[in-house]
Length: 171
Image (tube, rainbow, N blue to C red; front, side):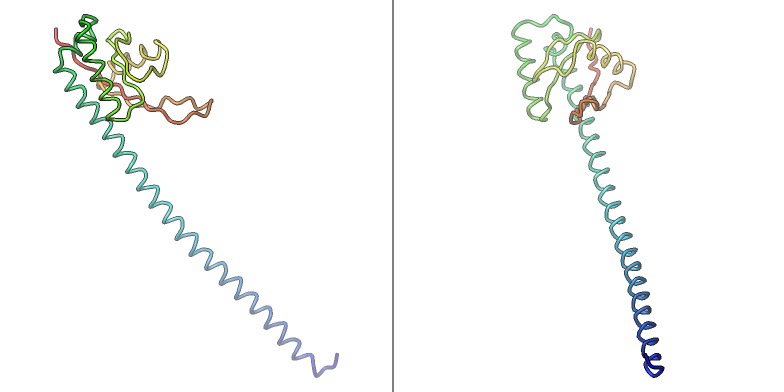
């Protein structure tokens, strides 16, 4: 190569390096802008989802409060929980339980007395009697409402929520 062509070669190499450097810097800047925008969007979506779950949970708790208030006014539910309901009363409570369960789209509804004995259920039971006994004790020792996830994570089952509410019995 002649000395006359060297300056052109140096300018060409410096130009290529400059283009490469500025392209890389531009790429990094765009990447940063994109990542910060996406993380902001993901945070916003997560916040919305969290508020939706919170609202859904509060709705379920409100449902339970309404059901407790209704059940406390129903002599048939009271008698069923005491184990003294007539066949006619028990059938009326079964019908009520089926309507409540299907209207609220619950998988099951169980009336359990203070000793943990299942007196009536609609839709099937979700655990053995020991489960209901422990849940009853927890509910009675809590504020009267217990809401928790009971899915078996070891078996990779979908979330299954239990809402337990204490119903005051009239003497």
